[in-house]
Length: 235
Image (cartoon, rainbow, N blue to C red):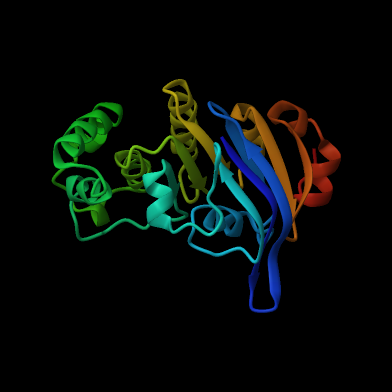
């Protein structure tokens, strides 16, 4: 579904990622792990068009989408759930969702709104709440629901459990698995590496802007040497 080949993105003269390649097949959860500063967020932001690559290719199904705008990528079915949610704090829950569905006709927007409220019943109960008053777990649900309002088939999630209590972390991972069961494809960046690898079909490990390992989720989870050397945690 998604292919990234030899991607390089620079900030001035500094290469944040260099010669990075990965693939995400339809219906998969693919994990992307690595220490802070590895380039994971840069890779996601380049893929959705927030940053322009200096080299390499991004393919979506049979289409070359290298350098496409975020709006074009959204219309092609690719949505980013950004780190720290980035909601419109002064807008209500339902207003945040309506804004997210601006690219689709109003009748379709209403249908999708009912779908996401069914998927996230809590948001239905909070529909009139300003987003800035939501708890961390509620805000994360709204951030994911907002991406689904666009009709995205491929979700790129950047640190979806960041700052959440342990019980809410479990809820988010259960939701990720449920989204796959509902036909979504997911590329997930997550610092809670071991937990992500429990649910990922495949995973990649990044370090200092480059890919250093690729395996199945369970296979990479068993690589204690990688966890100690690249992630700074002992097995």
